[in-house]
Length: 110
Length: 348
Image 1 (tube, rainbow over the protein chains, first blue to last red):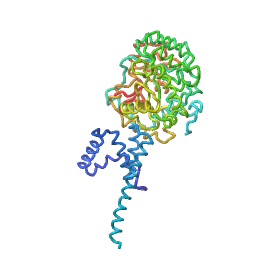
Image 2: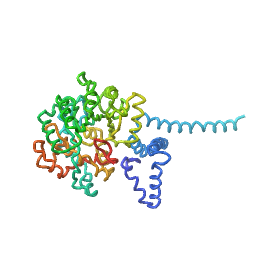
Image 3: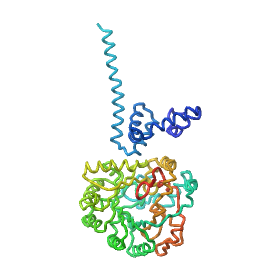
């Protein structure tokens, strides 16, 4: 193995069931159900998945859900706005902890 | 492999302008033979259902050089149908009892006998479709009255518009194409095309601007209707979502961009037996500019003539053609992926 990530590994995602078939099956059944049309459409879920992929910085997920979003008719502007949502939440999650820092700072200060 | 310029592959002497090179590349991908998939679906050998549509390619000449064009059309292509071949078409149409004649190109309107041919077809009472690239309407004064001409003969206009923005449209079809297309659509709307109750049908064609499959047709249609109305006051009837077939210039794009193998795998993995049973070649015949007969426009561009003794209009035999076996190859995966693809959009 020369790198930790190999694009071809994405196609092998289903192979995770090889080492634990029962839990693998449950996971993929669940995964399939999550992405089926429900209160949200498959199309809406695709864009959420794209944003979450960036928040998690998962290269496999970004590869998969970029393609998926394109095949669901999203354009580059919409997709980048979704990435900004992920960026804003990540940035916000950092900054809101600033309040915790401030609290502690004040607690330790005279 | 060279990146496509404003010239056709043929004018560049590009190796993929040759049909045998394209077929060789498709075979070399090492994927499951398409006929095996059909066999698994009890569809091999593939047979026609009826001869309902005559799709006639009246020439490869075009005012555009789109990156995905399966015809390798462009201003430098001089192959156009002559009137004597059109007369042979008319005779064959009489023998076939088809309901619809679908005129395509290139830009079919650039054929000097286009209007004459439409008038002949119109007098026969056939439903006529013209695959209009839109920009031809505004390309030259002599074409500005095309909307009125279409209206006079109640032609169904089918036009490509890959997206409701200039960036995606121009990237695929050429600089300035989107703006010209919108002007042409407004001219079509002005004579009644796409207007509810007018009886004048204007359908748009979406195809992906890249190496991916088309979105859900009905969802996309809703977005197109809203965006085109809100932004440009343009209306239309239906949107056809079409998959790009891996031949000619689109095949060249796939190879040059490094997407070829993944795209082919994607098509194979998305094989849908229901779409396979509804492929358009089961109800359509394709006629080339020189009068040869094919199962579809894609087979035409790959020079795969019908498996019949009469391969030319002069030997047209409707019974023999009805009983023929349709020629399939690896490019056929493009019509059977996902929701299916045809010149009338999805097939499932």
